[in-house]
Amino acid sequence: MTADASTLKHTPLFERHREAGARLVDFSGWAMPLHYGSQMEEHHQVRRHAGVFDVSHMTVVDVTGADAYAYLRRLLANDIARLEPGGALYSCMLDERGGVIDDLIAYDLGGGAFRLVTNAATREKDLDWMATQADGRAVALVVRDDLAMLAVQGPQARALTLPLLPHSLRGPARELAPFRAAQGQVAGGEWFVARTGYTGEDGFEVLLPAERAPEFWDALLEAGVAPAGLGARDTLRLEAGMALYGQDMDQSTTPLETGLGWTVAWKPAERDFIGRAALEAQRAAGVKVKQAGLIMEGRGVLRPGMAVHTPAGEGVVTSGGFSPTLGRAIALARVPMDTGERAEVVVRDRREPVRVVRPPFVRHGKPLV
Amino acid sequence: MSEIPKDLLYTETHEWVAIEDGIATCGITDFAQDQLGDIVYVELPEAGSAVGAGEVCGVIESVKAASDLYAPVSGEVVEVNQDLTDAPELINKDPYGDGWLFRVKMSDPSETDALLDAARYEQFVVEES
Image (cartoon, rainbow over the protein chains, first blue to last red):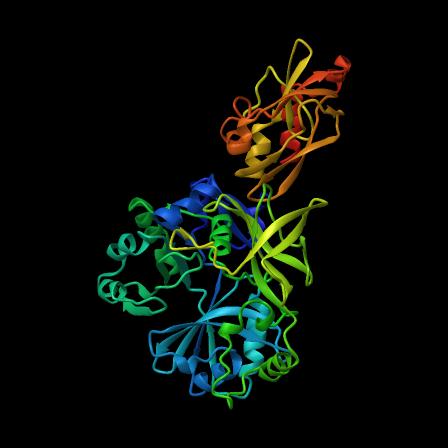
Protein backbone atom coordinates (compact mmCIF):
# COMPACT_ATOMS: atom_id res chain seq x y z
CA MET A 1 0.00 0.00 0.00
CA THR A 2 2.90 2.33 0.65
CA ALA A 3 3.58 4.08 -2.61
CA ASP A 4 6.89 4.03 -4.38
CA ALA A 5 6.89 7.79 -4.65
CA SER A 6 9.67 7.87 -7.25
CA THR A 7 7.51 6.66 -10.15
CA LEU A 8 4.45 8.74 -9.27
CA LYS A 9 3.45 12.27 -10.12
CA HIS A 10 3.94 14.84 -7.38
CA THR A 11 1.81 17.83 -6.49
CA PRO A 12 3.60 21.07 -5.52
CA LEU A 13 3.05 20.04 -1.88
CA PHE A 14 4.67 16.62 -2.09
CA GLU A 15 7.65 17.60 0.08
CA ARG A 16 5.30 19.11 2.68
CA HIS A 17 3.38 15.84 2.88
CA ARG A 18 6.55 13.84 3.28
CA GLU A 19 7.91 16.15 5.97
CA ALA A 20 4.58 15.88 7.83
CA GLY A 21 4.94 12.10 7.93
CA ALA A 22 2.04 11.41 5.59
CA ARG A 23 1.21 7.86 4.56
CA LEU A 24 1.58 8.36 0.80
CA VAL A 25 -0.42 6.18 -1.56
CA ASP A 26 -0.75 5.79 -5.31
CA PHE A 27 -3.93 7.62 -6.28
CA SER A 28 -4.40 7.35 -10.05
CA GLY A 29 -0.69 7.75 -10.62
CA TRP A 30 -0.22 10.53 -8.06
CA ALA A 31 1.63 10.19 -4.74
CA MET A 32 -1.05 11.51 -2.39
CA PRO A 33 -1.41 11.61 1.40
CA LEU A 34 -3.89 9.04 2.74
CA HIS A 35 -3.48 10.46 6.23
CA TYR A 36 -0.90 12.16 8.44
CA GLY A 37 -1.27 9.79 11.39
CA SER A 38 -4.97 9.35 12.08
CA GLN A 39 -7.67 9.55 9.44
CA MET A 40 -10.27 9.62 12.21
CA GLU A 41 -8.77 12.67 13.93
CA GLU A 42 -8.46 14.49 10.61
CA HIS A 43 -12.12 13.79 9.95
CA HIS A 44 -13.13 15.24 13.33
CA GLN A 45 -10.85 18.26 12.82
CA VAL A 46 -12.74 19.15 9.65
CA ARG A 47 -16.18 18.65 11.26
CA ARG A 48 -15.27 20.62 14.39
CA HIS A 49 -12.62 23.14 13.36
CA ALA A 50 -10.79 23.29 10.04
CA GLY A 51 -8.69 21.05 7.81
CA VAL A 52 -6.83 21.49 4.53
CA PHE A 53 -6.64 18.99 1.69
CA ASP A 54 -4.16 19.08 -1.15
CA VAL A 55 -6.33 18.43 -4.21
CA SER A 56 -3.84 19.68 -6.76
CA HIS A 57 -4.09 16.35 -8.58
CA MET A 58 -7.56 17.31 -9.83
CA THR A 59 -7.84 18.50 -13.41
CA VAL A 60 -8.54 22.18 -14.02
CA VAL A 61 -9.57 23.14 -17.55
CA ASP A 62 -10.32 26.69 -18.69
CA VAL A 63 -12.80 26.93 -21.56
CA THR A 64 -12.67 30.10 -23.64
CA GLY A 65 -13.51 31.24 -27.16
CA ALA A 66 -16.58 32.54 -28.98
CA ASP A 67 -18.33 29.16 -28.78
CA ALA A 68 -17.45 28.34 -25.15
CA TYR A 69 -20.96 29.02 -23.87
CA ALA A 70 -22.74 26.99 -26.56
CA TYR A 71 -20.16 24.22 -26.25
CA LEU A 72 -20.69 23.79 -22.50
CA ARG A 73 -24.46 23.86 -22.87
CA ARG A 74 -24.08 20.82 -25.11
CA LEU A 75 -21.29 19.15 -23.11
CA LEU A 76 -22.88 19.27 -19.65
CA ALA A 77 -26.15 17.79 -18.37
CA ASN A 78 -26.63 20.75 -16.06
CA ASP A 79 -27.10 24.12 -17.74
CA ILE A 80 -24.47 26.84 -17.41
CA ALA A 81 -27.14 29.31 -18.54
CA ARG A 82 -28.16 29.18 -14.88
CA LEU A 83 -24.85 30.80 -13.97
CA GLU A 84 -23.89 34.41 -13.65
CA PRO A 85 -20.25 35.48 -13.58
CA GLY A 86 -18.76 34.25 -10.31
CA GLY A 87 -21.24 31.38 -10.03
CA ALA A 88 -20.53 27.64 -9.72
CA LEU A 89 -22.56 24.67 -10.90
CA TYR A 90 -22.21 20.94 -10.20
CA SER A 91 -22.81 18.82 -13.29
CA CYS A 92 -22.31 15.48 -14.92
CA MET A 93 -20.68 15.11 -18.33
CA LEU A 94 -22.50 12.32 -20.16
CA ASP A 95 -21.93 10.15 -23.20
CA GLU A 96 -24.64 9.64 -25.83
CA ARG A 97 -26.11 6.73 -23.83
CA GLY A 98 -26.47 8.90 -20.75
CA GLY A 99 -23.54 7.21 -19.00
CA VAL A 100 -21.55 9.44 -16.69
CA ILE A 101 -18.10 10.22 -18.13
CA ASP A 102 -17.30 12.34 -15.08
CA ASP A 103 -18.79 14.75 -12.58
CA LEU A 104 -17.36 18.24 -12.24
CA ILE A 105 -17.84 21.78 -11.04
CA ALA A 106 -18.19 24.49 -13.69
CA TYR A 107 -17.32 28.07 -12.74
CA ASP A 108 -18.39 31.10 -14.75
CA LEU A 109 -15.28 33.29 -14.89
CA GLY A 110 -17.11 36.12 -16.67
CA GLY A 111 -16.44 37.48 -20.12
CA GLY A 112 -17.59 34.24 -21.72
CA ALA A 113 -14.87 32.16 -20.04
CA PHE A 114 -15.49 29.12 -17.85
CA ARG A 115 -13.44 26.84 -15.62
CA LEU A 116 -14.10 23.12 -15.14
CA VAL A 117 -12.67 21.14 -12.23
CA THR A 118 -12.82 17.42 -12.90
CA ASN A 119 -11.45 14.26 -11.29
CA ALA A 120 -7.82 13.16 -11.41
CA ALA A 121 -8.60 9.50 -12.13
CA THR A 122 -10.51 10.38 -15.32
CA ARG A 123 -8.11 12.99 -16.64
CA GLU A 124 -7.16 11.51 -20.02
CA LYS A 125 -10.67 10.28 -20.76
CA ASP A 126 -12.18 13.67 -19.90
CA LEU A 127 -9.67 15.68 -21.91
CA ASP A 128 -10.09 13.40 -24.94
CA TRP A 129 -13.86 13.69 -24.76
CA MET A 130 -13.79 17.46 -24.32
CA ALA A 131 -11.39 17.88 -27.23
CA THR A 132 -13.49 15.64 -29.47
CA GLN A 133 -16.65 17.58 -28.69
CA ALA A 134 -14.85 20.88 -29.25
CA ASP A 135 -13.84 19.84 -32.76
CA GLY A 136 -14.96 22.41 -35.31
CA ARG A 137 -16.00 24.95 -32.68
CA ALA A 138 -14.32 28.19 -31.68
CA VAL A 139 -13.33 26.78 -28.29
CA ALA A 140 -9.97 26.78 -26.55
CA LEU A 141 -9.31 24.24 -23.80
CA VAL A 142 -6.40 25.11 -21.54
CA VAL A 143 -5.34 22.66 -18.83
CA ARG A 144 -4.14 24.65 -15.83
CA ASP A 145 -1.36 22.45 -14.51
CA ASP A 146 0.34 25.69 -13.43
CA LEU A 147 -2.18 25.99 -10.57
CA ALA A 148 -2.27 24.16 -7.26
CA MET A 149 -5.57 23.54 -5.49
CA LEU A 150 -6.21 23.44 -1.76
CA ALA A 151 -9.55 22.73 -0.12
CA VAL A 152 -9.87 24.37 3.30
CA GLN A 153 -12.95 22.97 4.99
CA GLY A 154 -14.67 23.16 8.36
CA PRO A 155 -16.66 25.59 10.50
CA GLN A 156 -13.56 27.78 11.07
CA ALA A 157 -12.13 27.35 7.57
CA ARG A 158 -13.22 30.64 6.05
CA ALA A 159 -12.27 32.75 9.06
CA LEU A 160 -8.80 31.19 9.22
CA THR A 161 -8.19 31.38 5.47
CA LEU A 162 -9.31 34.96 4.77
CA PRO A 163 -6.35 36.76 6.40
CA LEU A 164 -3.93 34.56 4.42
CA LEU A 165 -5.30 35.46 0.99
CA PRO A 166 -3.74 38.21 -1.13
CA HIS A 167 -5.02 41.59 0.10
CA SER A 168 -7.08 42.38 -2.97
CA LEU A 169 -8.99 39.06 -2.68
CA ARG A 170 -9.89 39.22 1.00
CA GLY A 171 -12.89 41.51 0.59
CA PRO A 172 -14.43 39.64 -2.34
CA ALA A 173 -13.74 36.26 -0.69
CA ARG A 174 -15.35 37.40 2.58
CA GLU A 175 -18.55 38.32 0.72
CA LEU A 176 -18.85 35.05 -1.22
CA ALA A 177 -22.16 33.22 -0.91
CA PRO A 178 -22.09 29.40 -1.12
CA PHE A 179 -21.21 28.16 -4.61
CA ARG A 180 -19.76 31.52 -5.61
CA ALA A 181 -16.18 32.26 -6.58
CA ALA A 182 -13.85 35.26 -6.83
CA GLN A 183 -10.61 35.62 -8.72
CA GLY A 184 -7.82 38.09 -9.01
CA GLN A 185 -4.49 38.73 -10.67
CA VAL A 186 -2.04 39.53 -7.94
CA ALA A 187 1.70 39.80 -7.76
CA GLY A 188 2.97 36.32 -8.45
CA GLY A 189 0.05 35.21 -10.57
CA GLU A 190 -3.58 34.22 -10.58
CA TRP A 191 -5.60 33.33 -7.48
CA PHE A 192 -9.12 31.92 -7.45
CA VAL A 193 -11.25 31.36 -4.35
CA ALA A 194 -14.53 29.44 -4.39
CA ARG A 195 -16.92 28.73 -1.54
CA THR A 196 -17.25 25.10 -2.56
CA GLY A 197 -16.07 21.77 -1.22
CA TYR A 198 -16.60 18.05 -0.86
CA THR A 199 -17.08 17.58 2.87
CA GLY A 200 -20.52 18.93 3.82
CA GLU A 201 -18.84 21.74 5.76
CA ASP A 202 -18.39 25.39 4.93
CA GLY A 203 -15.07 26.40 3.43
CA PHE A 204 -13.06 27.48 0.44
CA GLU A 205 -11.37 25.82 -2.48
CA VAL A 206 -8.36 27.91 -3.43
CA LEU A 207 -6.50 27.75 -6.72
CA LEU A 208 -3.18 29.52 -6.77
CA PRO A 209 0.14 29.49 -8.62
CA ALA A 210 1.84 26.15 -7.94
CA GLU A 211 5.03 27.82 -6.71
CA ARG A 212 3.08 29.76 -4.07
CA ALA A 213 1.33 26.67 -2.71
CA PRO A 214 3.95 25.57 -0.12
CA GLU A 215 4.02 28.94 1.68
CA PHE A 216 0.21 29.16 1.65
CA TRP A 217 0.04 25.61 3.05
CA ASP A 218 2.53 26.55 5.78
CA ALA A 219 0.51 29.66 6.67
CA LEU A 220 -2.70 27.63 6.97
CA LEU A 221 -1.03 25.12 9.30
CA GLU A 222 0.47 27.97 11.30
CA ALA A 223 -3.05 29.37 11.69
CA GLY A 224 -4.23 26.07 13.19
CA VAL A 225 -5.72 24.39 10.14
CA ALA A 226 -5.00 20.65 10.29
CA PRO A 227 -3.61 18.81 7.26
CA ALA A 228 -6.11 16.17 6.16
CA GLY A 229 -5.63 13.30 3.74
CA LEU A 230 -7.67 11.51 1.13
CA GLY A 231 -8.91 9.03 3.73
CA ALA A 232 -10.72 11.71 5.71
CA ARG A 233 -11.87 13.33 2.48
CA ASP A 234 -13.63 10.06 1.58
CA THR A 235 -15.41 9.59 4.93
CA LEU A 236 -16.41 13.27 5.01
CA ARG A 237 -17.95 13.19 1.55
CA LEU A 238 -19.65 9.88 2.34
CA GLU A 239 -21.27 11.37 5.44
CA ALA A 240 -22.29 14.36 3.31
CA GLY A 241 -23.94 11.95 0.85
CA MET A 242 -21.77 13.14 -2.03
CA ALA A 243 -21.15 10.73 -4.86
CA LEU A 244 -17.64 9.58 -5.78
CA TYR A 245 -16.95 9.01 -9.45
CA GLY A 246 -15.90 5.45 -10.26
CA GLN A 247 -17.71 4.09 -7.21
CA ASP A 248 -21.19 5.59 -6.98
CA MET A 249 -21.51 6.31 -10.69
CA ASP A 250 -19.56 5.66 -13.86
CA GLN A 251 -20.12 5.30 -17.57
CA SER A 252 -22.35 2.23 -17.09
CA THR A 253 -24.87 4.23 -15.03
CA THR A 254 -26.88 7.37 -15.66
CA PRO A 255 -27.48 10.30 -13.28
CA LEU A 256 -31.08 9.13 -12.88
CA GLU A 257 -29.92 5.81 -11.42
CA THR A 258 -27.33 7.28 -9.08
CA GLY A 259 -29.06 10.01 -7.10
CA LEU A 260 -27.92 12.74 -9.49
CA GLY A 261 -31.19 13.42 -11.29
CA TRP A 262 -31.29 16.83 -9.60
CA THR A 263 -28.21 17.87 -11.58
CA VAL A 264 -29.88 17.32 -14.95
CA ALA A 265 -31.39 20.53 -16.36
CA TRP A 266 -34.39 19.38 -18.42
CA LYS A 267 -35.50 22.90 -19.20
CA PRO A 268 -35.33 24.48 -21.67
CA ALA A 269 -36.57 21.47 -23.62
CA GLU A 270 -34.75 22.56 -26.77
CA ARG A 271 -31.28 22.42 -25.15
CA ASP A 272 -29.79 19.33 -26.76
CA PHE A 273 -27.11 18.27 -24.27
CA ILE A 274 -25.18 15.07 -24.91
CA GLY A 275 -27.10 12.15 -23.39
CA ARG A 276 -30.43 13.96 -23.27
CA ALA A 277 -32.25 11.58 -25.64
CA ALA A 278 -31.05 8.56 -23.68
CA LEU A 279 -32.10 10.07 -20.35
CA GLU A 280 -35.52 11.00 -21.69
CA ALA A 281 -36.01 7.47 -22.98
CA GLN A 282 -34.94 6.05 -19.62
CA ARG A 283 -37.27 8.38 -17.77
CA ALA A 284 -40.19 7.47 -20.05
CA ALA A 285 -39.54 3.74 -19.62
CA GLY A 286 -39.24 4.16 -15.85
CA VAL A 287 -36.00 4.20 -13.89
CA LYS A 288 -35.52 0.82 -12.16
CA VAL A 289 -32.92 1.68 -9.53
CA LYS A 290 -32.04 4.55 -7.27
CA GLN A 291 -29.36 5.63 -4.84
CA ALA A 292 -30.12 5.21 -1.16
CA GLY A 293 -28.28 5.73 2.09
CA LEU A 294 -27.80 2.78 4.45
CA ILE A 295 -27.11 2.85 8.16
CA MET A 296 -25.90 -0.29 9.86
CA GLU A 297 -27.84 -1.11 13.00
CA GLY A 298 -25.31 -3.45 14.56
CA ARG A 299 -21.55 -3.53 14.63
CA GLY A 300 -19.34 -3.99 11.62
CA VAL A 301 -18.44 -1.98 8.54
CA LEU A 302 -20.19 -1.67 5.18
CA ARG A 303 -17.83 -1.83 2.18
CA PRO A 304 -18.21 -1.20 -1.56
CA GLY A 305 -19.41 -4.24 -3.49
CA MET A 306 -21.41 -5.82 -0.66
CA ALA A 307 -24.77 -7.25 -1.74
CA VAL A 308 -27.98 -5.60 -0.51
CA HIS A 309 -31.17 -7.64 -0.08
CA THR A 310 -34.52 -5.84 -0.09
CA PRO A 311 -38.09 -7.14 -0.48
CA ALA A 312 -38.08 -5.34 -3.86
CA GLY A 313 -34.96 -7.14 -5.11
CA GLU A 314 -31.18 -7.02 -4.97
CA GLY A 315 -28.88 -4.03 -4.75
CA VAL A 316 -25.22 -3.25 -4.14
CA VAL A 317 -23.19 -1.03 -1.83
CA THR A 318 -21.31 1.51 -3.99
CA SER A 319 -19.54 3.41 -1.18
CA GLY A 320 -19.35 2.34 2.42
CA GLY A 321 -17.36 2.81 5.54
CA PHE A 322 -17.33 3.77 9.17
CA SER A 323 -18.83 7.17 9.90
CA PRO A 324 -16.69 8.87 12.56
CA THR A 325 -19.46 11.38 13.30
CA LEU A 326 -22.22 8.79 13.75
CA GLY A 327 -20.00 6.10 15.24
CA ARG A 328 -21.46 3.42 12.99
CA ALA A 329 -21.16 2.15 9.45
CA ILE A 330 -22.94 3.98 6.63
CA ALA A 331 -23.12 3.44 2.90
CA LEU A 332 -24.41 4.67 -0.39
CA ALA A 333 -26.08 1.88 -2.34
CA ARG A 334 -27.81 1.31 -5.66
CA VAL A 335 -31.10 -0.41 -4.85
CA PRO A 336 -34.43 -1.20 -6.54
CA MET A 337 -36.67 1.86 -6.94
CA ASP A 338 -39.31 0.38 -4.62
CA THR A 339 -36.95 -0.26 -1.73
CA GLY A 340 -38.59 0.53 1.60
CA GLU A 341 -37.13 1.53 4.93
CA ARG A 342 -35.40 -1.74 5.75
CA ALA A 343 -32.84 -3.89 3.99
CA GLU A 344 -30.09 -6.39 4.72
CA VAL A 345 -26.46 -6.28 3.66
CA VAL A 346 -24.29 -9.36 3.37
CA VAL A 347 -21.25 -8.73 5.56
CA ARG A 348 -18.86 -11.69 5.46
CA ASP A 349 -21.59 -14.29 4.83
CA ARG A 350 -23.90 -12.81 7.44
CA ARG A 351 -27.03 -10.83 6.67
CA GLU A 352 -26.92 -7.65 8.74
CA PRO A 353 -29.99 -5.39 9.06
CA VAL A 354 -29.65 -1.81 7.78
CA ARG A 355 -31.94 1.19 7.81
CA VAL A 356 -32.55 2.82 4.42
CA VAL A 357 -32.38 6.61 4.52
CA ARG A 358 -32.09 9.58 2.24
CA PRO A 359 -28.56 11.02 2.25
CA PRO A 360 -26.91 13.21 3.49
CA PHE A 361 -26.10 11.60 6.83
CA VAL A 362 -24.27 14.63 8.26
CA ARG A 363 -24.25 18.29 7.29
CA HIS A 364 -22.45 21.18 9.03
CA GLY A 365 -21.29 18.92 11.84
CA LYS A 366 -24.79 17.69 12.72
CA PRO A 367 -26.18 14.17 12.24
CA LEU A 368 -29.28 14.27 10.04
CA VAL A 369 -30.34 10.64 10.37
CA MET B 1 10.26 1.77 12.41
CA SER B 2 7.54 0.17 14.48
CA GLU B 3 8.01 -1.06 18.01
CA ILE B 4 8.83 -4.78 18.47
CA PRO B 5 9.25 -5.73 22.15
CA LYS B 6 12.04 -8.25 22.73
CA ASP B 7 10.13 -10.39 25.25
CA LEU B 8 7.23 -11.37 22.96
CA LEU B 9 6.74 -13.99 20.26
CA TYR B 10 5.27 -13.24 16.85
CA THR B 11 3.50 -14.70 13.80
CA GLU B 12 3.96 -13.90 10.13
CA THR B 13 0.36 -12.66 10.18
CA HIS B 14 1.45 -9.92 12.61
CA GLU B 15 0.02 -11.20 15.89
CA TRP B 16 2.04 -11.12 19.10
CA VAL B 17 1.94 -13.60 21.99
CA ALA B 18 3.02 -13.36 25.63
CA ILE B 19 3.04 -16.72 27.40
CA GLU B 20 2.81 -17.14 31.17
CA ASP B 21 1.87 -20.36 32.97
CA GLY B 22 0.44 -21.91 29.81
CA ILE B 23 -1.79 -18.90 29.10
CA ALA B 24 -1.06 -17.03 25.88
CA THR B 25 -2.10 -13.38 25.73
CA CYS B 26 -2.54 -12.38 22.07
CA GLY B 27 -2.72 -9.10 20.18
CA ILE B 28 -1.66 -7.52 16.91
CA THR B 29 1.68 -5.80 16.46
CA ASP B 30 2.47 -2.12 16.23
CA PHE B 31 3.36 -2.67 12.57
CA ALA B 32 -0.05 -4.25 11.94
CA GLN B 33 -2.05 -1.48 13.60
CA ASP B 34 -0.03 1.13 11.72
CA GLN B 35 -0.71 -0.59 8.40
CA LEU B 36 -4.42 -0.91 9.15
CA GLY B 37 -4.96 2.68 10.23
CA ASP B 38 -7.70 3.69 12.67
CA ILE B 39 -9.42 0.55 13.94
CA VAL B 40 -13.18 0.93 14.28
CA TYR B 41 -14.48 -2.55 15.10
CA VAL B 42 -13.21 -5.92 16.25
CA GLU B 43 -14.85 -9.30 16.20
CA LEU B 44 -13.09 -11.63 18.63
CA PRO B 45 -13.54 -15.31 19.51
CA GLU B 46 -15.89 -15.95 22.42
CA ALA B 47 -14.62 -16.98 25.81
CA GLY B 48 -14.92 -20.75 26.09
CA SER B 49 -14.51 -21.36 22.37
CA ALA B 50 -11.66 -23.35 20.86
CA VAL B 51 -9.16 -21.79 18.46
CA GLY B 52 -6.54 -23.47 16.30
CA ALA B 53 -3.07 -22.14 15.53
CA GLY B 54 -3.03 -20.38 12.16
CA GLU B 55 -6.80 -20.43 11.83
CA VAL B 56 -9.03 -17.41 11.41
CA CYS B 57 -10.61 -16.56 14.76
CA GLY B 58 -11.89 -13.03 14.25
CA VAL B 59 -11.87 -9.86 12.20
CA ILE B 60 -10.35 -6.43 12.67
CA GLU B 61 -11.99 -3.62 10.74
CA SER B 62 -10.19 -0.35 10.18
CA VAL B 63 -11.25 2.74 8.27
CA LYS B 64 -9.36 1.18 5.38
CA ALA B 65 -10.29 -2.50 5.26
CA ALA B 66 -11.38 -5.66 7.05
CA SER B 67 -8.55 -8.00 8.04
CA ASP B 68 -8.75 -11.55 9.30
CA LEU B 69 -7.35 -12.26 12.72
CA TYR B 70 -5.43 -15.52 13.12
CA ALA B 71 -4.98 -17.45 16.35
CA PRO B 72 -1.24 -17.70 17.06
CA VAL B 73 -1.68 -20.87 19.19
CA SER B 74 -4.29 -23.59 19.78
CA GLY B 75 -6.44 -23.95 22.85
CA GLU B 76 -9.43 -22.62 24.72
CA VAL B 77 -10.16 -18.90 24.85
CA VAL B 78 -10.30 -18.04 28.55
CA GLU B 79 -10.62 -14.26 28.40
CA VAL B 80 -11.48 -11.58 25.84
CA ASN B 81 -10.64 -7.88 26.09
CA GLN B 82 -14.13 -6.42 26.62
CA ASP B 83 -12.85 -2.84 26.55
CA LEU B 84 -12.34 -3.13 22.80
CA THR B 85 -16.09 -3.31 22.17
CA ASP B 86 -16.48 0.38 22.94
CA ALA B 87 -12.89 1.48 22.41
CA PRO B 88 -11.31 -0.42 19.51
CA GLU B 89 -8.87 2.50 19.14
CA LEU B 90 -6.99 1.04 22.14
CA ILE B 91 -5.38 -1.30 19.62
CA ASN B 92 -3.92 1.71 17.77
CA LYS B 93 -2.90 3.53 20.93
CA ASP B 94 -1.39 0.65 22.89
CA PRO B 95 -1.13 -2.51 20.78
CA TYR B 96 1.05 -4.38 23.32
CA GLY B 97 -0.81 -3.15 26.41
CA ASP B 98 -4.44 -2.07 26.75
CA GLY B 99 -5.05 -3.14 23.14
CA TRP B 100 -4.52 -6.88 23.83
CA LEU B 101 -7.19 -9.06 22.20
CA PHE B 102 -7.72 -12.39 23.98
CA ARG B 103 -6.11 -15.06 26.17
CA VAL B 104 -5.79 -18.72 25.25
CA LYS B 105 -5.15 -21.70 27.54
CA MET B 106 -2.66 -23.50 25.33
CA SER B 107 -3.40 -27.12 24.42
CA ASP B 108 0.04 -27.75 22.89
CA PRO B 109 2.96 -25.87 24.49
CA SER B 110 5.30 -27.04 21.69
CA GLU B 111 3.51 -24.68 19.28
CA THR B 112 5.70 -21.86 20.57
CA ASP B 113 8.53 -23.41 18.52
CA ALA B 114 6.75 -22.27 15.35
CA LEU B 115 6.53 -18.64 16.49
CA LEU B 116 9.09 -15.97 15.63
CA ASP B 117 11.24 -14.19 18.17
CA ALA B 118 11.57 -10.40 18.00
CA ALA B 119 14.70 -10.44 15.81
CA ARG B 120 13.18 -12.78 13.23
CA TYR B 121 9.90 -10.88 13.21
CA GLU B 122 11.73 -7.61 12.67
CA GLN B 123 13.56 -9.16 9.74
CA PHE B 124 10.24 -10.42 8.37
CA VAL B 125 8.68 -6.94 8.63
CA VAL B 126 11.64 -5.33 6.89
CA GLU B 127 11.41 -7.83 4.03
CA GLU B 128 7.66 -7.36 3.70
CA SER B 129 7.55 -3.59 3.78
